[in-house]
Length: 252
Ligand SMILES: Nc1ncnc2c1ncn2[C@@H]1O[C@H](COP(=O)(O)OP(=O)(O)OP(=O)(O)O)[C@@H](O)[C@H]1O
Image (cartoon, rainbow, N blue to C red):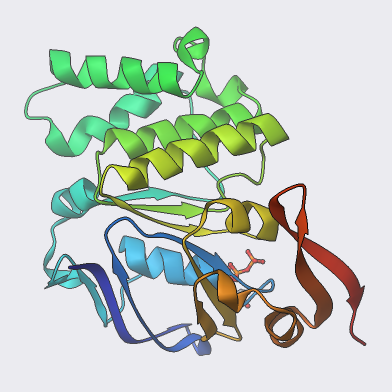
């Protein structure tokens, strides 16, 4: 069954059209990478899927996104934005915010336990009582992911989740996203790092000028695609058993 269906989605900011007639469907257990040049509309698309920007043409679990209340949507979609300003909150409380869509009068023992275990899994337990605004960019990114996972959503939307992370943390965060998908869930991430996408994604959607120009599995990652999408010569080579994107030159 499709968990997400996007049909003829168009969106613009005031008079500027940014997304043009986007259509695709996503099934359970897919880890989708959305790739494309700066300004292609990737983050805007993710915000439309998260319900942050209002638009027609998005269905989640068979229902139009417009019929969901904010709380219902927060139980099915976890969104990890590119930039996150936590204010004066402790790390534990930021992650606990993810449980709000499930709370009646306050956090239950299960809510607290779930957040404790997520912080541990993300290597954040020692920072639980720190003020989140004092964290490094990478630490804050992981808190942000913990908050989204605490929502226990069906679909995780991540906007460049590894952009602030060192190589070890990049791998660890991606493994957490991969584990989430293996549990029968779905993840869609905007990413510039083609190698990270190659390693973890099961599907690749390339955008350019607000449109989808390629959509498919690893077979889409060929020189022709890199030429059309990024205007570069590049190819995927096998290095020590790993597929690696090799950027050769920019096309003038
Ligand atoms: N709030 C906004 N108001 C007006 N225009 C916006 C707004 N947010 C984004 N845009 C414009 O929409 C276009 C697409 O932006 P978007 O952030 O979706 O692209 P992107 O593919 O995610 O880019 P990047 O890879 O650089 O993050 C850009 O031209 C951008 O200037």
